[in-house]
Image: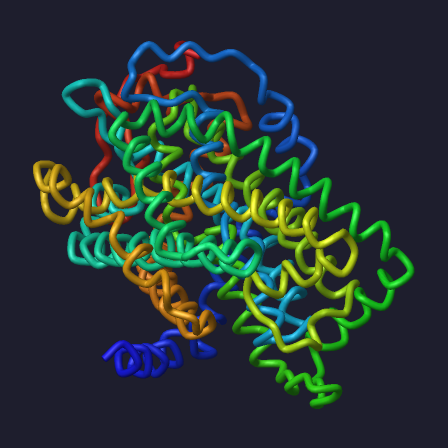
Length: 483
């Protein structure tokens, strides 16, 4: 039965991730890059100064239903830094070859502005609940700004599928495979423990999720970066060769040799872009739901964290994984997924140390992603079925990871992730195109210091930026006086 479902999924994957989908994703990113006059490249130092430069800035958040900007970005990074950075990159390499990394880089650099736009819009069009809690995301700006309720429903159902397939199923499955390979632990036991920990954290609500991610995400990222750089430094003579292989195979087919299947250019593009979007989520529409809960003075301020996320996730962490695998030469061994990552570290470090590093990183990466993604699941379920349903459906969130723990064919499970990414991304990308003018208005409003759309003005009563689809909501005449 499962094999039949996965066969159908493979056909659907081929349709959803055809050339037109990849062209559409790239086109939206290029369009926003051109309309913003290459903002993410021109103003990269400014982005870093307004994000990384303010990580330790204290922000007072009086309501437990809200997060600080850093808690919001930590929660979003918890969702982005996961198995996609390790097992996802390894799978992209095994299916698409070294060239997939080039296309992952390209999509990330362009996608920095895509993620900035979707987060900015999510904060601008968010809603304040009765208890002061903030709720936002693509389903809100699709409905409020465009009036496309049907498209918002499709997006919400896509998010539900994405969270169940990518966040709970694949995150848990990756950890289960890692601990089975490293310590011979039963994957059902491992995934069961992850489900228990996730349940304990999500019961505590938004603030507990944010606090958990705020503490663990920086630590786990630093451990993996240091360990990965150590491997790359020890294999530094092969770095030029790795660069050349990435560039060459991005544009030219690689013939089968040495037991490695030949890689086609189209496979490199598809796997690089699909895994890249699953990893950094630029255009996917998930991270905006976490960022919409942040206590931030202006929508564009929070949007800048999106560009920072993409840079850290893909340009830094995914690249380290790729260089660890390619510089150690383990790609020719026929392994895939987390087993390939483990083989790469084990070729340099003693096996016990390599196993410990990979196990710690994959456990923390996947656990924080599983926990962080619950915010997206809760937002989508509330939007699709009403606020009362989450009381019961939240327990469904914990099931898929345990149910599929013993399934061994990793590559076939990744097909499900590809489908869930496409179903979320396509409606969101259409909305971003339609609302690109609104994003540019918000960006100029902040950069030029007019501040007509500060959150203390828009959260409760508006004003909202006028679009071609809805009337303006009237606002204060001199909002800039409130900065």
